[in-house]
Length: 60
Image (cartoon, rainbow, N blue to C red; front, top):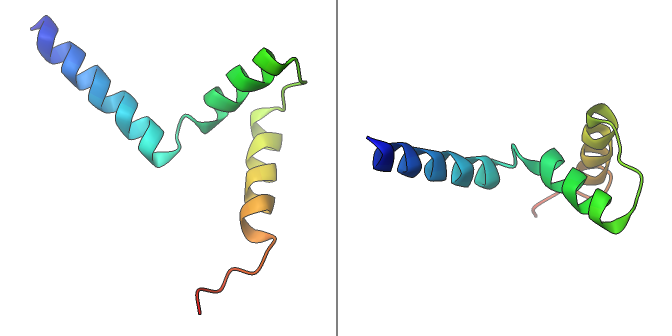
């Protein structure tokens, strides 16, 4: 039973990373490590949305 739990937890962590669900947690760890002030989750989300949609977004 314990082995299945480990496999499921590893799969869950992989999916969180692949979908970007853990982006704020990764950012927070990196900012603390660099000694930078940490944004709130709302400010982090707003900055990411601005970054994503601020440039030209056409594919063709």
